[in-house]
Image (cartoon, rainbow, N blue to C red; front, top):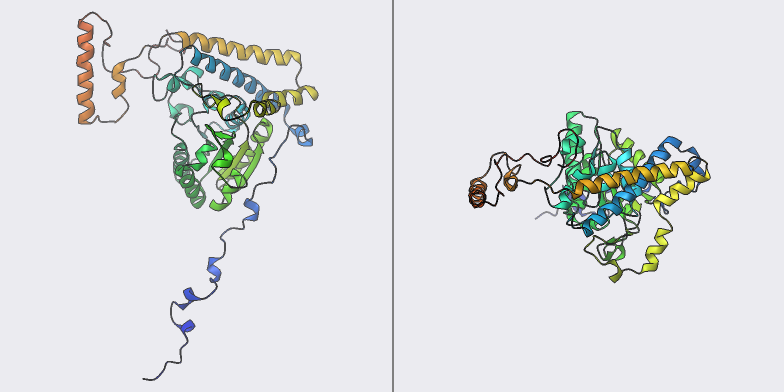
Length: 408
């Protein structure tokens, strides 16, 4: 048999066996512009602070003060039995206030369970923001009305939801950007990977804000990630990573504003890591002294977001004692009203357990609803008076005075 003169490297498909990959295997994106800075971006205490809008600074300050009081009041409500649980964001107020205030009206906020303050700063009624944590309803507000996705306790599930909504909005031609908040612990969830991967491939108008508060309950960051920073994770997906001082509210607002503007222009997603600290325990059910030293907490108290901004404003003459007092009085008024409304017993309808689950109830739900209805009717006949008059269910607003938002 005659020997072929064709070399192996000339045969069809042989390129895949070459010792070096062909040019098509080169990186799709230059990684250098995607890498975060080596140090968190800061504004307060730097020359950049002089160029900040005084009106914006005063608004940020008022929201920080109100947010701090909101956190302390909600924590007190758990001790009084008015809330089942409360994950405090004390120390992280700058991240949440900046996230809320940087959004346009048409944009969407996708909070995690610790982000009730962000929802309130965006305009949500404080009582409605606590409805889930009180155990009354799965959510206490209409997400479409407020453009705030439901608060929920599963970690990172809101991230793919944010990508889906933003992608759908772009397909429809709507000028909408989604801002999704997550903690450092949530970055270890599969939802985090899936959301960032889809967002980058589709160039979805979404921004991911990771609030790195140091601990996933009792697990420090060093025990769940070996990356140089969480912002570095962005490079692997093909999006920019930004690192910012999470206690510098002006810096967070600036970085998020740039990321949102980029997303709105069609530039795709951005991952922002805000380095902050959880001053309080994970929740009121947690004892943080078992896994972190008290002196560590005190070091971070010296970097308190409220005091940082207050010092900047008073030093520059933008804020005086009268302004400080007015902000504190407004926050106290909010806390007093929240206290009064949360101390009123809610009027709940047990039949609401079956409302808003499916548009058309399943056979099993109808059977369960009938069983509960029979039990309630039997209790009513025995004189307990606990049975509702009908099974319609009025939703989270039931029991409130018309137009006032007050609980009866």
